[in-house]
Image (cartoon, rainbow over all chains, first blue to last red; front, top):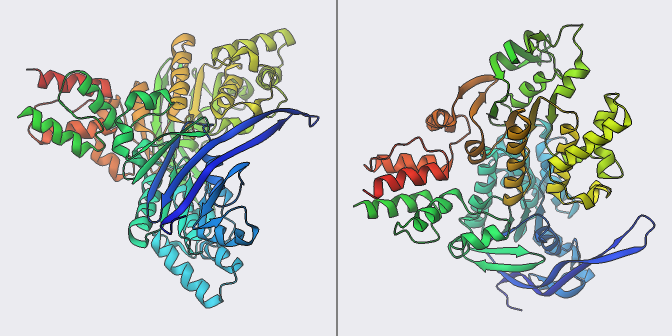
Length: 287
Length: 282
């Protein structure tokens, strides 16, 4: 495996056994079906897919919360099934979940952020340095003395991200981090993720149902029935409006409007992603 | 016949140092049969407001009238009110608890004291209404997908035969198709049963597509209360309070700013498409 790969899966298959109330086996569900993909260091990756398509199961393989039934997963060159790498993998690949209330444990924001590095045995002085830089990176430094209970959802989610950053990860996996947030909270969390990617070069893997959040990703994977159904740049993916709708997904509203106008005969290219692009195209035609 | 809010004030921890006004001087009328979108950022008072509508929270001052009667009057039957004004909380599937879907939906009407036959009839109708396939009726609700669980939870409220249905973020956490399905379901409940719907949402696109009236809350006050296109015309003010208009509204504004003579009040893709084509096919 190549040094530039942050995460790589090789024919990854994950099955779980369904049991009834008495514990008898009812059947086997294949949640991940023969997935091979590579994520390069420093990329911003988005994973789309409808509820039940296997996105979250896949993500849990990226920091060794789940292990493959068949195939293998490599994180920065370490096989997740090799026990001796377990803690290194969890430190390098941090995870953010959907519900901010499930991942905050400290009574004070800065204590919560310090929990990770403390468990890694980082010296006290360095813990505080890490807490400070992490909270600054997500724009939550001024809240460091507050109780997490008094924060909004978006602020809590940014504190969770700071808690992961304080462990100095190379990669952050975000599993629908904005699903429970209002538009402002959503914007702040996505902005924080993009800044970490741009400035710190941290690899980001974002799982989401909001198509607008995907527009700036380097690469998009679309999951369906446990396998990767589509992959490409956002423009390549969002050019296929009908296919995405078949997969229970959508496209950003602007992309859909451009698609509809194109169907009605206006000379607009497929795969318009932002409203600036659409306005520019319309201006060209109007002239 | 309607819900009327008359000079509602609500203060959390009144008479303490922590006193905090969540609602100030709210005056609203919600007529029968309307489909209303209620928007506002986190902490704007939306949730406190909807809890006033079925008497879960009592106003610090002011009155709430349901069909002309003050719901906080000591003689008023609150239990009946809560059957008539159904509240579907955020992530309602977390409240499922029975061993099968049918039993779960029966729980509400059973507590109204109805006889067994009527309870089961209502549960059956409600599950049919939300479009849950028959084969799931006697399965554990916990084996269903997220979207289906939510349908069962909504059926639990429908089985109470409400006249007003209030839903707090009914599409949170669902995939785009699941979101459309739940919103289409709510629309069909509104159209078929003629019930009043109050939809609390963060998604301006959803609100613009479905509702006939939008109420915008900010800092415990009603900021706007109008037709969607009139509300979204204030997109700059909405941004200042952490909200936004649908993306198409911005496209229309930018086209107009670029000197293309389009009207700017489109809020849905269909409206925008029609308006743009009108100008471009001349």
